[in-house]
Amino acid sequence: MLKKILLSFVLLILAAPCIHAENGDSTTLRQYYALVHSASVAVCKGDYHKASGLFDSAFTMISYPFHTDINNAIYATIYGENPDTAALRRYFDMLQKKGVNIYEKYHRYENYRPYIVSYQAEDSGTVTDKAAQHTIQDAISNDQELRLFSKNYYDEYYHNSLLPAIDKIDSVNFWVVDSILHLSITSGIPIENLIGINAFWDVDIILGHNGGWGRYNKLLCDSMVRLGLMDARVMAHFYDDNCGAFYKDHRIKRSNWKEDYQCDEFYGIYGTLILYVWGDVQFILFLNENEKEVVDRNREHLYLQNIYEECKIRAFAFYHRQEGFSYPMIKMFPGTLEEIKEFESHILEWRPHYIKYNGYEDYELDRQ
Image 1 (cartoon, rainbow, N blue to C red):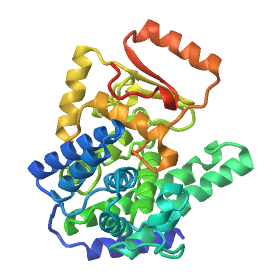
Image 2: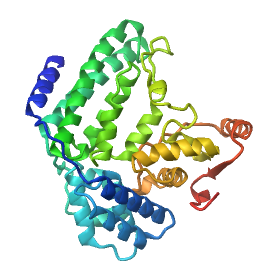
Image 3: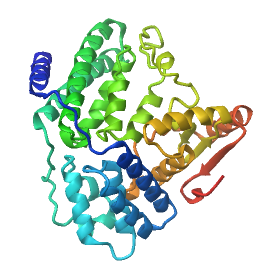
Image 4: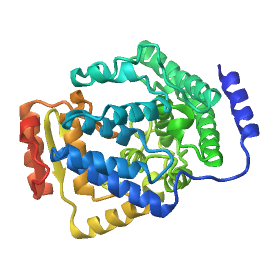
């Protein structure tokens, strides 16, 4: 399998032309992110008509709108009055070009079923480059195989005896991913369309696993975001979530991530770590004035919008995930009521200003 991946890696490099293309210039991308952010805020307020109009306006700004926004445009349309079936068909077609199986993705949601009757379970969607997609699928298979073996045989994912082998596989996968990211840049096709949204999540896993070894390509990924080839919101949370990556309880730590990119343990780089999800209880912790200035400056570089509003959208997405609304990279920590109370008492000592949502019915976008 490793030889197969290496061969695919070489073929991908040979196939890549030495040009750069984009999904939108900096002005249109900034406008796009502002519009879809406002649309998401409108969804959170229950103004589905306004949200639909904002999503449609955003989708005219760039050639390839992002998966998250298309999904949420579908949500706004279905939950609004008199759903526009032509618009829904257009959105579904856009998702299919990101390798999405419409039936598989949406049949679980009762409100969506009347609108997906023409889609079959075997309709898997399409991607631009199936060879690149298969290469990533092989890479993630190797990534998982040795880790699962370690877990099953030693009851831990990173047993000392297997670390050199895991390091080797991860290093090969890293360069495979790097070549595919360059393919996206040279073709001007977003990674979601080039290899499909599911393979893109696999890329995220592979890059995350390489962080602990000190291998990361943030500058390349930043370039892709600024060319409109990667979703800025996905990458911002990815960067924040991988602050201080390591292996084996810090016994192996080659990453200089925190030092190289001034990654703060509290808020990360882009501030996404200020949202804590404990079971159904969510906390949004406030930044102090200096921290907010740093976060705002960092977010501006990647076209990102207000951090507190984004966290509220993420909170809404968590509570409404079973209805079809989504937002990238939401993690939950399971906790008992006692653990949540203990966490909140700790917050009061550490960060006295915060927003708390105590479950689905308690959500309110305008809470300060």
